[in-house]
Image 1 (cartoon, rainbow, N blue to C red):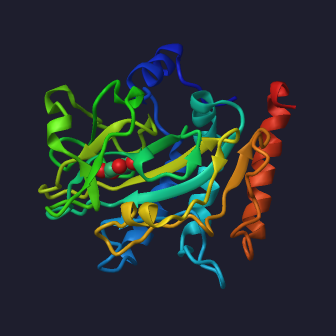
Image 2 (image 1 turned 45 degrees about the vertical axis):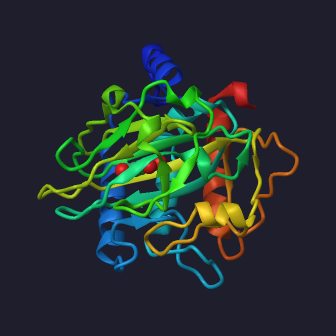
Length: 296
Ligand SMILES: O=C(O)CCC(=O)C(=O)O
């Protein structure tokens, strides 16, 4: 494995639910991410200028969530520079199932209210690892990520409909959170954090003159089932204030490392016209096997 967390960083991830490793992506990988994310943001519509729900699937006929730039983000999200870190957090069998861009434009980027990702997500058991990659410097003045250390061990708290300001359609009530315990995820462009599914996190508005864009790449262990559950309640919960309704019925998932460990995971749904991506993922998986005998 080429990219490693220190034992202390791994311990922080397990203890706090989030770690900011003392490293950054290799410059080539970061430049690819920056170029591609900038292009996606430049082409964004009124609905997507703050948030792009899926960034790693290219625009193709019959591919519902595809967009220009998807192939480049897919290459990054399947590369060792990213997956090596994720593997250390969730184990050797890794599934790529999502990516998003939280663009938070200068001057008007809305807050992302306190929430737990697990409130919305369709895998059981609900184990995930998210890499939040800073495309721009992220700090207190432009609305960096914030989190409550240790909250990844809590159950999923009630998320209420949010009628006020903020990007999400629902959030955890203020009375359940002690904001004094929150920590800021201050990152330089190219640095990243890794966080767990139940972690309580969010971010403030961006009233500064600097954009704060982050690319998030989301993974689950292949021992979890990606359920594609599509009941009405889940669709309601997933309604963002950006015009997106998030459903997982047709979402393609890719095994990017190790082996599938759940017999009902379906790696064919939504893959039509994405065969070149299947090949990229499979090559990445085979390459990792070759350099890590334990995976053979
Ligand atoms: O970028 C943000 O402000 C929020 C990100 C987030 O909620 C997530 O990555 O799950």
